[in-house]
Image (tube, rainbow, N blue to C red; front, side, top):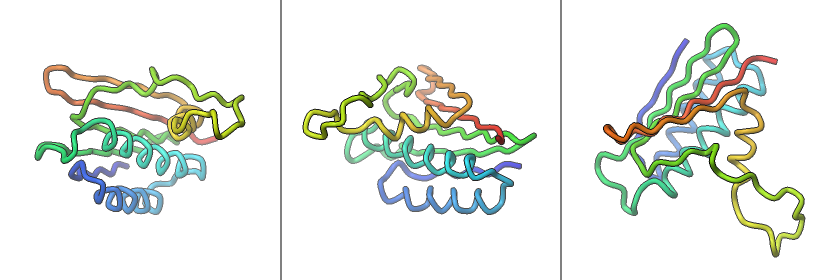
Length: 141
């Protein structure tokens, strides 16, 4: 079972991506953890692509592609874009020991939660085509 969507790399397209997640949750036999990871991954990675991957306004070719596949109890989420290369696995872990909001760095928790919940994460950047691809998987518990 598969579903996919391609949207312009614009902030207003996040609504379409979340509606895609709603449809996938209703169509695919996802566990609660898989459904949560789907929504978290799409929202977090798409937001990071828009925030850091493209200039403002983004070029006309800028799109975000999301592909969801479900087979043998495993959810596979693929997010593709042609923005600046960025491997989320190379992002430092947030300082969870610092509980002082005045001195704690802002951000990084969404990506942290994706990495914590996923079974696997794989990133690839193709320098010839410019495509970035992030694949996140989660089996049923």
